[in-house]
Length: 117
Length: 114
Image 1 (tube, chains in turn blue, green):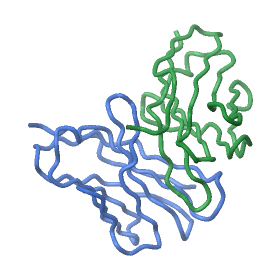
Image 2 (image 1 turned 135 degrees about the vertical axis):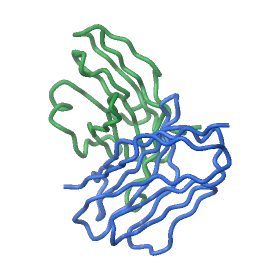
Image 3 (image 1 turned 45 degrees about the vertical axis):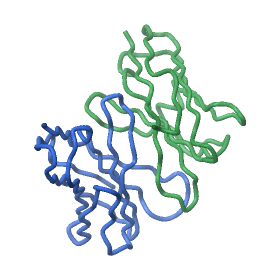
């Protein structure tokens, strides 16, 4: 069975620093897709960045980047130059590979990030 | 801001009452998922659609929940007889479908069952 684990419950950092959030996953699929989402205080879930398992290069979008270590089944999210508005709950998620629109997202339990001024 | 629109933002019902929430997927997205997020941040898949057709649903959804995505109307999720354990954030997500892996979520409907 697929599983996503985020071991850090919460992290507090100072503004303008870099933070890394950990995520490990379990899957039997040879091909899969990994995502990071951010949930704001209002409940809205915002897609941030994605890594396709067959791609060797780490994805980067704006001040978000990924540290994809396939042999360790690990996909860390790195946020550089953090801002107060980055304070939120961050979820790691995995979608199984293959085809078909029934493939679900499996989520971790989230890491709460607090950015201090 | 999210392009998946969910209404209402908050819903308060008594036990046994019906609770209905709506979702307008992002324009051009034929695939819709409904998830339930509890207070412990656990996400539970409920049902998903491609256009008007149900692709997959869990047992709970079959029994007490009803959902539809009619043509040219918002998708909806309705709990026929609310229970205290249904109190949660209900999230709708949409995607372009085949080959497009990313799901885009709305802001959710927070249901409280008293």
